[in-house]
Image (cartoon, rainbow over all chains, first blue to last red; front, side, top):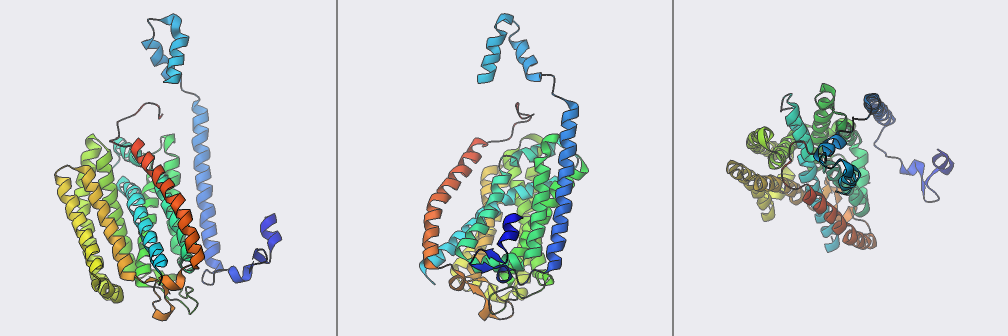
Length: 91
Length: 339
C-alpha cells in the first residue's frame, strides 16, 4: 500500500502516469466483479485448506507404519535395530 | 517485416503449441474425471498421471504472456485488456483445478465438491482458452491506436463458442491419450476406449469448425487456402487423428499420444499460417489490425530477447526433460512413500 499509494500519480515513477496507463476497455464494473469473484474463490480455498489441515491435526500422526514393517524384517537381529534404522534412512 | 520479427512470431507459435500439447493433456485429464464415474481407483490413477507435471505445464501459459509482453507489447496490451473477462474466467478455472490438485493429498478426491472443482475448473479454463483462440482468428473491434474498442459481449460470438467446444474436444482427446499412455489395468482400458472415441469427436468438431469458419472468418480461410503450408497444417491435423486412431488400435499408446500432439501442432499451425502477417485482426477496419511489423518491439529489444531466450529456453527444456524422464513409464498402483 505504501509503495503503490506513495508513487501516485505515477504508475512508473517519472515515466508513465497512472491515468495514461489504465486500460481503456476494462470497465470499473468488470474489475469490481472479478475482484469480488476472486475474493470468494480465495476465501473458499482458504476454508478448504483450513478444514483439511484441521482434519490432519485431529487425526494425529500415523502409528509409525514404516517402522513397524522394517521392524518385522529385521526381527531376527533385534540388537541391530539401530543399524537397520540407519540403513532405512539412507536408502 | 524483418526476419527477426518473423522469427519471434514463429517462436510465439511454437510456445503456444507447447502449451496446448502439455497443458492440453492435463486439462483433458480434468475433463475425463467427469466421465470415469465414481470409481476412486480410476480417479486416483488419473490424478497420479498428471500430478508431477501439471504445474510445470501451466507455466508455459505464463511464458507465452511474458514472451508476447517482450516482443509484441501492443498485442499483450490489447489482448489482456480486451479479453479481460474471458481471461479472468480462464484464471478462475485454473485456480479452482489447481486448488483441487493441491488439496488432493487430503484424500478428498471422491467428494463431489473436489470433482466439481477439478473437472469444472478444467472445463471452464479449456473452453475459454478456445474462445480466446476463436476471437484471435475472427478479429475484434480495434480503434486506430490498436486498442480494443468493443464491449465484453463482442467476444461471445458463434465462431468463438464453436472454437471453445473444439478446444474442449482436443484437450479431452489429449488427456485420454496421455492417461492411456501412463496407466495400467482398468484405468488403462477405459482411457484407451475414451481415446478411440475422442479422436472421432475431435474430427467431427474440426469439420464443424471448418464449416463455420468458411462463413464466420472467410479472410482467414482464404489466406490459409492460398498458402501451401496452410494445406500442410490441415493435413497434419487429419493425419494426426488418423494416426492416433490406427496406432491406438494397435495398442501403441506412446505413438498414439504423439499423433494426438501432432494434431494440436497442426491446429496451432492453422492459426499461425492463416493469420500471418496479422496477429490481432481488427474486425471493424483491417487498417487497425496489429501486425507482426506494427506490433513488434524495437529491434534492440528483439535482439536482447534472443540472448534471454538462448539462455532460458535450453534451461526450461532441460527441466522439462528431467521431469518427464524421472516420471517415465506407467503409473504403478500405490507407490510407497507418497502417503
